[in-house]
Length: 184
Length: 325
Image (cartoon, rainbow over all chains, first blue to last red; front, side, top):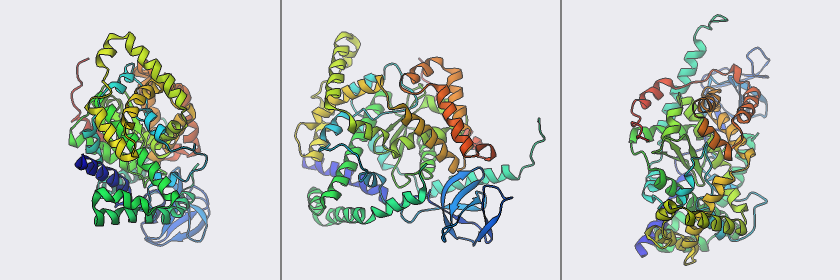
């Protein structure tokens, strides 16, 4: 029994600690791939150039607009940079587990949560569709071994970076391809 | 729309609390061994830290239990190349989401229905049917983005916490009545005291210090499933997951209209699935109308996105042969 408890302790602790390991936030910043990256006032390269970025200079990216990232520069200017001249930069603050952050959300129900845990054992499932017999899943023995396999195989940062490079390469290729004539 | 710099600021505000909490846990792991680690770490927590810690731990436990049941029910695809690919795409899209610091884990369910599930704690399960319905990596990315949004925004977990005990009891009674009427379900009913329940009980006992809680989990599980298949989540949350998922995929560089294409194909090829889907989700047309508005706001018509066709074709070639029936 002690061994089992130790195992569960390890699993739980590892799961909690893993999100604050090497994987880090990626959404918050982009950095210039070359000197002179232009920051535009609007999401078009025909708009006013507000400033330029040096190679490696990072800015906060807030959202995509067409082929541009809406960004905020270090000196607080809002503008747009082309997605083709910047790359994603890991966020230095990205080591904090979001779930812990979410714990501080307001308006949560009071209580010790034990009943929430119980009722949520299978309740939180949402997806694209339901099949007719899905309710039977509540009578199925949990395959915890398969769950632990999911937990034990984090995706390496290198694999994610490789995919990101491939995606950008495809976009750059399409962007530089000749535009087909209207109607074709 | 979530603005990322405010998102970052909120994360930063939590840094001190989190870092000290995790450092305490890590140090005690090293110095006292695992049995005493939990107690020592907990003793060093402030009440606020403890509440945060417990909530996340609970979310992980819930998600683990749910994912385990779904994996047990549907079966799991073991092919490491296929599963690795889905994990790579899912993690990549999640890294462009609003909650990239969370951990997301992906598995493929051995079932031909078109479905995907997001369990609290980051356990995301997608069926083989959903993979087959996708025509490109971009479509898969959008589908996984939808589930990442559900997890990141804690749609399910928050909904669960709002449930009342009365609802659970009513649903549980309804479920028992249904099982009693159906010989097949009765035959398949799992006794609450079998080894799976015992494992759940051990985990719950460890986590809560309350003996017997595991059995309550198992009983409530049946009730919860009954409720979810009938009621579904708030439709606004489904719209939000659609919209956020598409945004994440677009940020990651994928073709913006991929989710629309996926839903359209599902609608065109599987009227039965759409009917089932619409029991718990907004009507397909409304989902696509909502998505169209999001795409407009993102100037999607100007976006040149990747579809990842070459990679997807290679992976499609290793899809397992569909099982008969």
